[in-house]
Length: 377
View 1 (cartoon, helix red, strand yellow):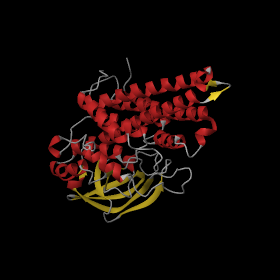
View 2: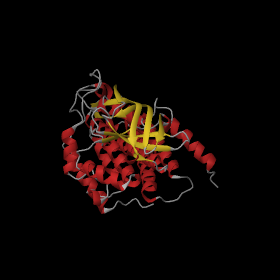
View 3: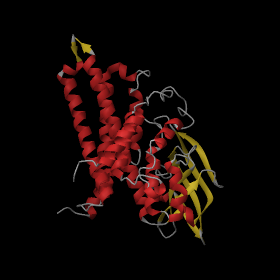
View 4: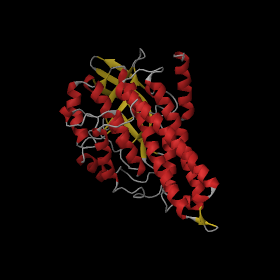
């Protein structure tokens, strides 16, 4: 594979860096000191700034006013957003737009995608199923009556659901097929129960009781759910990488200035070795992320399906980001727990990312099943 990014991908990174340079991670109350969510809504001003910078339409084709870029570009931008803990549904919007671009009807694309590009329509995704442990596609049942589908079931921990306009969610039919439904938040029969994520953001349990959707709002292509899930998982790895890189930079700055016995902490061998180990974690997270994103972008063949590379990337992301923040807390000493210092926020976000779309153990099991089905010669 070629690790060189294209001019378009590099331009997207530069635009993202310009926007996120004005964002501070402590713009909301600390999740450690807040009962419930840290805010009622995501960062709307930042969302509109991203729209004005043409960053919301990256996965959308030019005929719908987008840039038509690939998952690699999306992961590059997500990586930058995580460095400042940007409180926007960028991952969910990207994954939904990418999936709609590939699998929706022409009419639905024309209706939805231009408004995602401008930031006027916010689409989130449901990917954790009923409990967060069971397959998400089994959480909701879908029964067809002519051109209408009736949805019943529950999805938990749907990010930004209370303030998003539409929710793209998986459901399964009686014959075992998986479809995606794009459901307005105010649709009759859909109710939300507030939940708070580990990092203090406002999520919701989405309950569907005989919610009706027409054929135009339903993606029946069996590959649609795989497309959505794969990009959500890979994008989560990109967020973990960006967060981990920022935390290691914070740790380097702190240990380079903090002195004990007249010497900077960074000059002590035990400190340097721990920091070096975390640097190796980040490089492994980076290489496995780009491998997974490259497989999604190119469709290149390999000894395993792309799901294998995605599982490897998520294993490294989950384990690596946890080790990075734990080492950072250790090397910062008591200062790392100071709620006036942003490190504890990164720790909370890291735990959220570690478990999102499945912890390392779940992906190790999935990887084992893929290796059993596709023996390596």
